[in-house]
Image (spheres, rainbow, N blue to C red):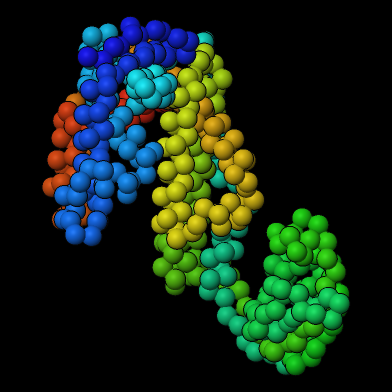
Length: 425
């Protein structure tokens, strides 16, 4: 019979116990492990899993046998420790091999850490007044007018406001510079969309006229290979069109079915911009609130808990990259990260997530915030409306009261109430 030491409580809400298995227990578990692993081993002359154990063992990595043997032995041990000593682990326990003969394992469980949010009642984020800036409204009006602009080919030199069709290429030391060639490029003079000095260089040219000029890229240009680099451009004007911007009048608004009148459209633009600003402002205030909660939280996280959260974050990243068909190595290069830098980021992010999660749970319990069944059911109904018809039945089953989906939505409703109460009006 295996020997289990009484659990010893350590710092950071960790509980540790050592279990030593008898030779008989170990050998029986190992035999089962080899039998299971052998199901996928092919040996000529035998059906899968039917070859002698010694032959199967020779085809399996010893480390895999040890790992599977331990996996066979652990469930009953976990069950005994959790039930007899009333342990409440929140993540799978860490298992360390202490000895092979006799097989001895050290098990480290992590329970919910002690948490306190200091000065919770004083945490508030003030709401700032949201206004639709006149400049923003005018910018939107200009955008709409530009959508209905007209162009007319002209035979004259180019000037401010004209739309040019250009072919150009940049060279340095007699060689073409990557990323500086364009054909049929549409440029409105005055738009400031190209490198500073470019529009000025092509102003005053006629159709089919060519000009050679040198410009230096800014030191903080987005393409690193061009930063601070002098490049000589050869630009040819392939066409010049005069741009006519419609006047912003009641007639213009009605003609393009943008509203009942000029003022009606201005009012709706202002309302839309305010709503966007309020949404952005709300998001910013929530981030400030979460930062304030984290800063006020007293918690000592176990390294095993942080490591578990790190793996979850890494898995999220890996799944996203898989969807985007991007390898981890390519992503690291694109984002200018090293493996060491990523590991540090994962550790920091894991600690931040855990701190906030446990702090929010503490606040929910401390403030006795609950979500009534009718509130949760209303949220489920709204959510199910967006689910395709052929998936609605399975989604409804997932969100059935008492299930995982239901509890998740219930948690969200509670958090919404908490956040609403802590965002000062």
